[in-house]
Length: 151
Picture 1: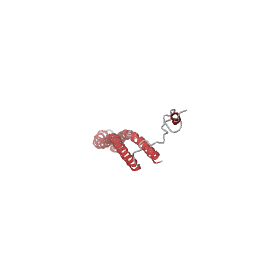
Picture 2: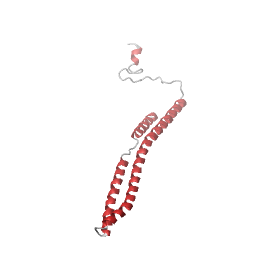
Picture 3: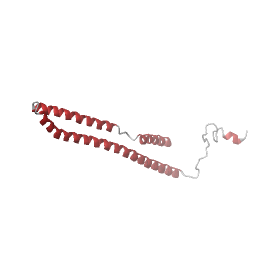
Picture 4: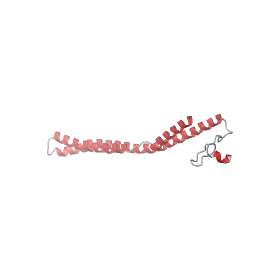
C-alpha cells in the first residue's frame, strides 16, 4: 500500500468518522499568545451576545410581570373603593330590613370575596411569568464549552 493510503488510518483524516486526526496544526502561523487573545475575544463576543439575549428575554418577561402587577394593583384599588362606597350604600339599604351591625357584616363579607377573586386572578397571571429559558440553556452550554477548552 502507498504512504497516502496509510494516512487515513492514523495520521490523516478518518474516512469513517469524518474526524481530522492529523497532527499538523490548523493555524501553524499563529503564536500561543495570538490564539489565547483570539479565544478571549471570542469569549467576550459570546458573553456580550448572551447578555443581549438575556436582556431581550427579560424585557418580554418584565412586560408580562408589569401587566400582572398592574392587575393586582387595580384589583386591590377597585376592591378598596368598592368596599367603601358601595358598602355604605348597601348597608343603608339593608338597614331597612335588619339590624345595622348584621348589614355591615354581610356587605363586608361580600366585598372580601370580590377582593379575594381579583387577587387570585392576579397571582395566577404572575405565575405565568417564566424564566428566560433559552438564555439559561445557552449559558450552560457556554460553561461546558469553556471547560472543554481549558482541558
